[in-house]
Length: 94
Image (tube, rainbow, N blue to C red; front, side, top):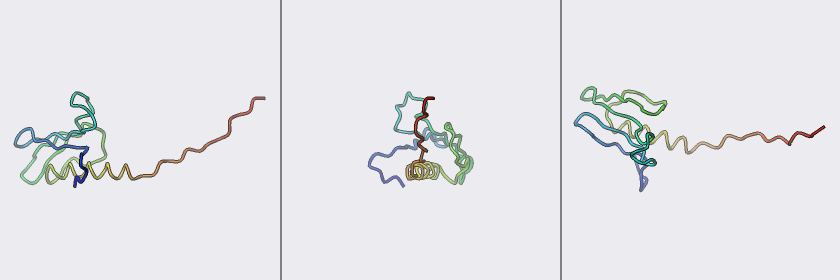
């Protein structure tokens, strides 16, 4: 799914059954760098522990689906229009 020349997220395997999902916008020593930890729950299921507060599922079929879901959410958030803020004239002094 990642078509960007420089992707924002990276899914890195740390053991045969564990991955970490990193946000490459932040350096490795920044707490925001780690987005989630992914653990193989069964052969066809992984469990996600979200380090960030994201409204995403905690179970997926595989680790790649976790990465795709986070990337999809990023594209959806970037595509929304800005929320208009009402402007009012300044108050007059009496």
